[in-house]
Length: 311
Image 1 (tube, rainbow, N blue to C red):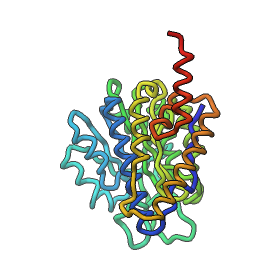
Image 2 (cartoon, helix red, strand yellow):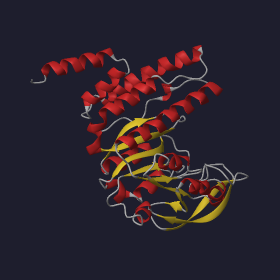
Image 3 (cartoon, one colour):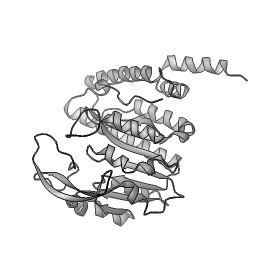
Image 4 (cartoon, rainbow, N blue to C red):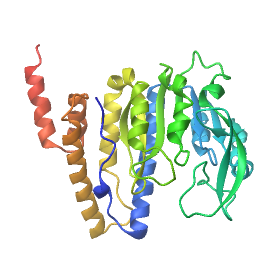
């Protein structure tokens, strides 16, 4: 059982500024989908890992009766940006996350102390300033908040370190109270020694979480939303609606290039649909999603299945 994580390079073939605007629009779509799912799942508590300015945590608590912890490893970024979220009721923590406690060397791009792309991993050929940062595991941190009766979501954007961060939260991930996760992954190695998307996906599914939505951030990098296996069937209408909304995303620059890119995106989506539906992962749900995006073949399949359903 599984959902393919790759939609192919054809997902967006715009160039320059048009491509950047399109990617931002798709990223906003996935962010909005995360919050729609968080509302449907009645999530109480959010851990934002790799928070930068903690805008996700601020948005989460602004709905009321919700709590969030924004975790940022870079001391300069934390003091300049993350800590401001406390004014909105977000708890902030300045430390690194990994699969074990201790310390590790943190690499900050030279000349850019307040940045979102510092990491515990190096990019080949890049110049860095280095410092030692304390590490904790997500399980250790979550254990201090008494979350036994609360539903939890994770937002993970940790510059190539997704797998060890999630391994450090494996008890939380496997718990029924962890309902929703959004994680940035890579299909190409951007940092030396990093784990790639298929390894992260295997860990998530081992913990009982199913991928339901994804964006196309950059070539070789994207974000995936996972939902607790037991909750997926109750969210089919929302998931279908979100896929339909993706089909309506438009580039702010209307052009022939955009029309060509959208045609390629539809072609790529069709190939992904065929690949996913060759397995056993909720085929009727996926056909309904495809039908919502305009697939006549999926609509016919749904009608045939209705005819075969005993009255």
